[in-house]
Amino acid sequence: MSFQNPVFIPGPTNIPESLRKACDMPTIDHRSPLFGEILHPARAKVQKVLKSDSAEIFIFPSTGTGGWETALTNTLSPGDTVLAARNGMFSHRWIDMCQRHGLNVEIVETAWGEGLPADRYADILKRDRNRTIKAVLATHNETATGVRSDIAAVRRALDDADHPAMLFVDGVSSIASMDFRFDAWGVDVAVTGSQKGFMLPAGLAIVGFSEKARAATKTATLPRTFFDVHDMANGYANNAYPYTPAVGLMNGLNQACGMLLEEGLDNVFARHHRIAEGVRAAIAAWGLKLCAVSPDVYSDTVSAIRTPEGFNATDIVTHAAQTYGVAFGIGLGEVAGKAFRIGHLGSLTDVMTLSGIATAEMCMADLGLDIELGSGVAAAQDYYRAHPAVTHKAAA
Ligand SMILES: *Cc1c(COP(=O)(O)O)cnc(C)c1O
Image 1 (cartoon, rainbow, N blue to C red):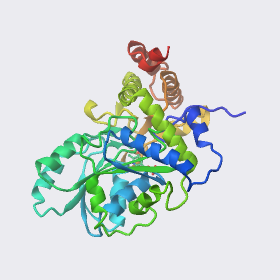
Image 2 (image 1 turned 180 degrees about the horizontal axis):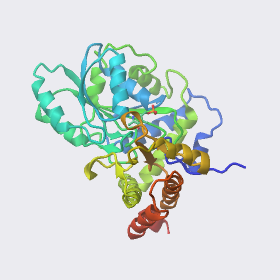
Image 3 (image 1 turned 90 degrees about the horizontal axis):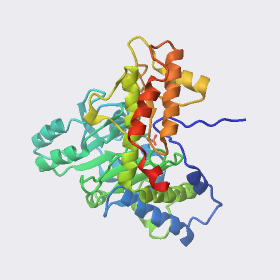
Image 4 (image 1 turned 45 degrees about the vertical axis):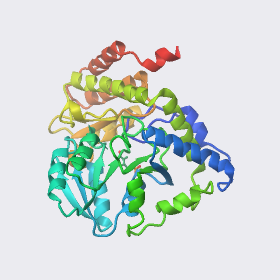
């Protein structure tokens, strides 16, 4: 007998039954019009999820990390300068990738728990009179710290400086869960993956390119083969890939986007917000603090929770897995051992969330933290009762 609990890691997320079935396909000819009937609608719907009328969508058999590489290698050349803030493990890893590709990164060190400092970006961009900065990197939602940054403010920083640099946004843990506006924010490359907001298994890198980013591909000289967007575009023109696509995942993506668009993107974002508010109510009731420094940067997809000094937060995650068969996220990098994470994105209901909060309480009590059983659950229950889920009422 195997018992399957929901997971509370910030990706991979829980997979709805209908999407598991959509991914389970017999083999089809991946160079046939039949594949085109999956590929083209999936790309069109991803464009809608990005809130774009013009982004060209590329989908690689890869993960979000491959999406980062797609953004860099197709648009930049060795020695080019990019501007990036480091405020957590994911922004750090994207910076590391830039450096390994021979790019020169102007790093804005930012406290873990704070959002991207758009004002410091603005100063640097204004001072860059020779326009050496070719791209600005922005991690929309820093999954390590549960911090959401203001991408519109980064766009304003570029516009105020009248700076032509491209804007690359990592939306791996925000897109399809929190408001993301490719066109309105003037994003040039958006990066995401299949296993977070899209509620699918890992296996797809999903990227959107603006016209400006597509123009940059013509002069960019970083080496690229697997992630070359021209090869990919040529494949798409023939209902195909330059290599073998992950057909089942593509079918799942097509259906996942259909689900999200049918619910309505703004309803999806509202659902994530209220689920997150319940989790935050629980955390406050426990007397614990988030890594995120202020409400304006609270993430609606993941909460990183600081534990008391001298306590190893990772023990909560280990104990939850061993004793209750439930997965939470560990603290990463600077907050390793100091925080644990509750992922609350994707396919999640109040009932599922309450089970996660209850489990976290049991673990913390088991490990001797001063947590009153039921305190967080009650706080979340109060919040959910006062803010009923729109989708259930509509369904009934
Ligand atoms: C998960 C994540 C990534 C990495 O994606 P993979 O699919 O694991 O390669 C990158 N950035 C952010 C913000 C993430 O949450």
